[in-house]
Amino acid sequence: MSTHETFGAHAGPLHTVADGPSISPLKQGKTVSTAAIGPWRLVAGKLIRQKVAMVAGAIILFLYLVGLFAEFLAPALPMTSRPQYTYAPPQGFSFFVEKPDGSSEFNFHVKGYKVEIDKVALRRTFVVDDTKVVPIGFFVKGAAYDLWGLIPMNRHLIGPLNQNDPMYLLGADRLGRDVFSRLVYGTRVSMSIGLVGVAMSLILGVVLGSISGFYGGWVDTLIQRVIEVVSAMPTIPLWLGLAAAIPLTWSPVNVYFVITIIVSLLGWTSLAREVRGRFLALRSEDFVVAARLDGSSEARLIFRHILPSLTSHILAVVTLAVPTMIVAETSLSFLGIGLKPPVVSWGVLLQDAQNIRTVATAPWLLIWPSLAVVVAVLSFNFFGDGLRDAADPYDN
Image (spheres, rainbow, N blue to C red):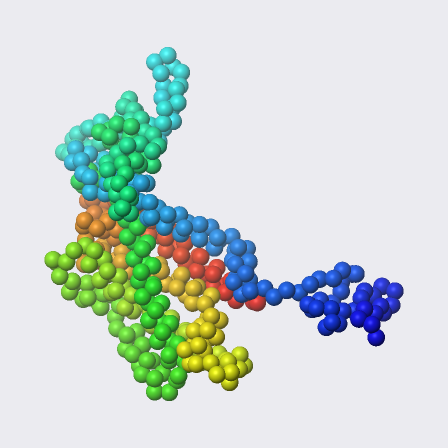
């Protein structure tokens, strides 16, 4: 029989192995080729269709870009204080100013302040003065800084044209420091500590989980008992005790890395157990047995054959673990036993909102850092949920 043979009036050609790549059965006279699609393309295709996850991913990317270019995006340095503007309220943008003849002229600006005396509380208060105009612009000259500690610059994305004019987009704190600039700088620390902590948890969880699930026996028993002991420890008291043991003479950089280690100490146990369960299920699969019979070493079996099949699942678990690290750092810093000034993080910013009087006088000290934490945590959770669903692309 020839390679192509027609059966019936409406049948198409029947392709045999001699024709090369396999061809799917014909549908209405058309040939549809079947091609192998990689797992990453399947995951990406399903993730793109989840709109909420994609929006959350865009927010996460935006936050990391803010942290990466914090010096350029912040109008002022985080420690620059102006006591004459203590607890100054937020200023809103305005685009037009009214001329004496009643017409309007475009002028991108914020309103200045005037001081009033609260006769009841007997304290000075700031009120936005509509008659004072503070022109602002983009790529303006301001305080000098080193971008990433390497490139000396003095340009800021936005700021007042006159450096002596006040511009507090999100208000000022008790020392007259710009809350917006400090929030931008805090994004770098709070978002990066989550990545560093999760990276350490990832290494511990994957390595110990892989060994436990692959070898079994007494090795598995020992590792599982260690996981149970670590999981049984109360999280907050342990964090408090370890953070309180940090010497006061340590530099902020050393404290930063120690806090990172502390928040990652208890984050690896759940990942280790999940990796162990997957290894127990996959180590007897046909592709693993075939690789073992082919002479593959144990390291090659683990890292070349089994772990790649868990990559998408591990990424989903890691994405969901980052917000836990962010909340842990924020909680420790808020309680005063985590990061401390001059380091700027969202938790450090929330230290200024620890008393009712401050919150009643300057609620923006509580609102903006709290909102940043909520947005970051929800974005990671939504993106992690979408990535976890996309990690199983055959589940329709």
